[in-house]
Amino acid sequence: MLIHHSISYTIKNLPPTSTTESQAITIGANGTDINIINIYIPPQSVCPFGFSASISQYLAIPNVVLLGDVNAHDALWYSSLEDSRGESLVNEIENSGCGTLNLDIPTRLP
Image (spheres, helix red, strand yellow):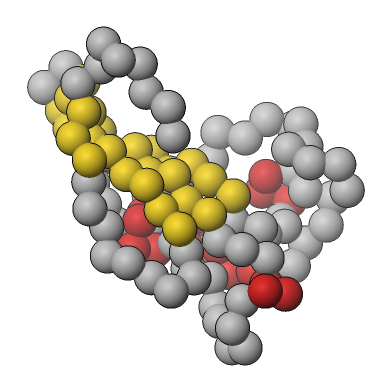
C-alpha cells in the first residue's frame, strides 16, 4: 500500500488470520474517518483443505474502501470465468451495503 506523505493516516490493526494477508489505514476526509483496507487471499489451490474465503469482517467496518486480490472469479468484476469462491464473495458484497467500482477491463489475462 502506498500513500502520499502529505496525507495523515493511522495504521489500523486488524485481527490476524492464517490465510488472508491484510493492511489497513484510517484517513480523515472532511471530518469522516475512511478505512482503507488492502487484502490478499491466495488461490484456493494453496489454501488449507476446507478453507472458505470471506471478506465479511472487512465489509462490516464503517466507511470502508476494500481493495485487493481475492483470487476469485465472477461476472460482477467482469471475469469471463466464475467459481464458487467468487459466488460466495459476491453474496457477501450484495448483503453488505457496499458496491464494486470495477470497469469492464480484466485485471489479468485469462
